[in-house]
Image (cartoon, rainbow, N blue to C red; front, side):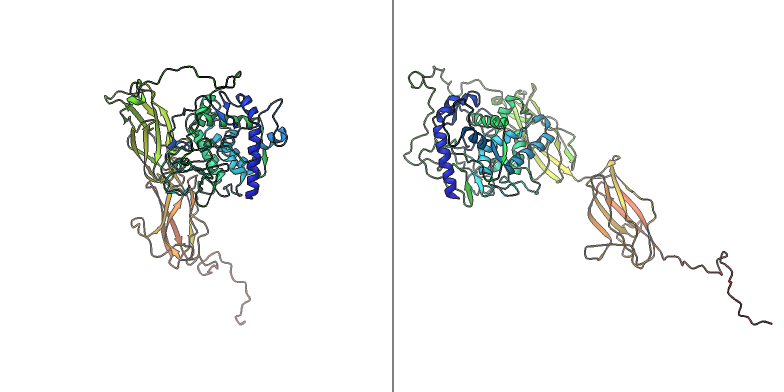
Length: 596
């Protein structure tokens, strides 16, 4: 397998070198303002980050990515390994399980956030650039990668500096974070962006279904409309904050939009070039995390060896006549630090709560108040046009509308930012929502509480009298419906107890009973819940030898209660007594008296 993998790399490397001239000549057709270097990788005049997402909060931590370009359509293509048409077809192929994950993620996100207009081809483009479609589709039947895909540690040596946030749970590194999985999430981002895409009850960054769904929601976490070019670019830059990254993803997006097809898992082409190659000239194989499989094409440690040259500067555009770099026109020098006029963000001194108090909601309900923050100067004046990020923190499944744990809002002219509606999950208790000025360490924390679901009324659905003979079982089960303000109260906790009387609600020691899993008599049931329609059918009831009228008391969280009478009596004698029954027939048997 290793020899086969090496042959693929050598083959792809030859292809990249031979086609470099074509890439350089035609790269403008790939994406706006894109050129290519001598290795066929995209470059731009300015690779400065343009999004406001810091490394610690981007999807990948701005980790390295694969720079291979899709094939170019040209009337006279340069020679390649295989025919141009076969190369085009190979690059358009997406492993079956990976493709299924992208399409399922698109469908789920479009249902949850139709205004985002997420195309699955964007997930495919990012998946290609981040991991070569999960290393050519090396996944098992559930979509989990065969061996972990782990990027270099983000230790500040040529990469962002992100110290460990997950105790090495995902990346096996307890000192620094690494991007993990087919969509290359860093652990700190996965902690709030992770999703369960394959319905196995857990969110795993190494599973392509989970990772694709998380990537879809991440790209749609704000009010971006990905059918709008500006919003599309903002979303991609938030995933990895590099102009080259943006152009590479856009190239693959357009390629997949022109057409793609399904190929068997494990047969996809493997990428070669990586964005950090130039930083590490001549470096040896990169160290891998124990038990993990490195990203294909990774070549070297994240730290340059002693004596290696610094990362070379990008060549400027060439003069067609001389081949020499064309000198750039003079530009105004950067003003000295501290002399630039302050931006609105620079003037923010603190955040204030602008109205949300007593944040409490019943599980599953939407909080009545929206979180509202006001950005103010030291003098208390509101600051407009400032981006405020709201983040749900703590052990809670509460989230903003659409299922996001993070929302970013721009303050209005008065300095006020209003978060999307906050929806309580099923976990009860207290959690935190933190408002932070993007680009500043200015924050304000809100405390919110989720209480258990309640009902204010209970009613029995049947009207038949519940009767039983001593030692028997009741033929009909008790079914109840819980409501709250007249509407069905679903998922409400219910307790059922056989009590002594209306005036004495203590548990009875005789009369009807339920049975536990071992068949033993129990007279109190807890842990019951109504279904989505507020309905609950209790288990079958049995009777001991005691006769009489007994009482079943059903209660819910919120104080609703219902008393259900249960009658235990011996069955009447079915044979009539002639001495007491005037309707009995006179005897017709022959007389036995002797004749006179």
